[in-house]
Structures are given as structure tokens and as C-alpha cells.
Image (tube, rainbow, N blue to C red; front, top):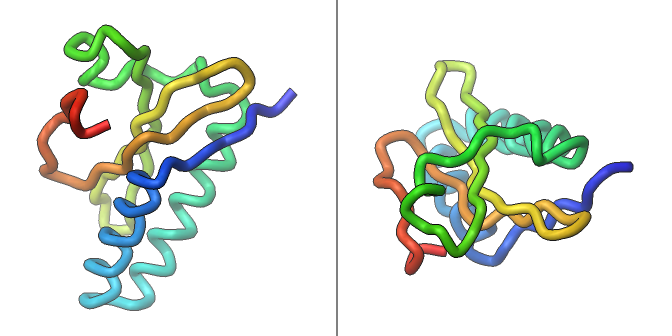
Length: 107
């Protein structure tokens, strides 16, 4: 049974900021990035507990943080940080290359 995927407001804001940044450099690149993100979110709905723990998981014991990875055609890696609650995968943040690890306040 597929899990529901919920994208938090902060994660939505991350998506908007990243897409705008990419779009200023390449509108086509931004469309492809959004398509890659959509594919990753679709995949996440299948079995989110199979994904690896996020690097922040050991620093934030209040939540079990997992991550999914997706990349651009040029190989820049992005990741979504999420937690699983019941039958729902809750995407908390989307992180771009070079961004610092999350803290509890970032969530």
C-alpha cells in the first residue's frame, strides 16, 4: 500500500527558492529539476522506510530522519529530508549542494 507524501511548508519554500535560483540561470534546467524532484517524491511513496537515515539523524534524536537523493543532469546532488509517521512520509526540507546539515531549529 502506498504511503501518502506530505511536503511541509518549509520544504515547499525550499523547492521554490531552489527552482527560482536554477531558473535564473536555466529555465529548462529548472523544469528538469522539478521533474526529478517529482519522480523522487513518487518513488518515496512506495516504501519510505527503505531509505537511508539522514546525516542529521544522530544529532536530532527527537525524530528518525531519513533522506532521498535526486540529481540534475549535470550531476548536482540534492536531497529531501523526511520522517515517517504512520502511513505518511513527511518531507521536512529539501537541501541543495553545499548546504550545511540541518539542526532541530531548521525543521
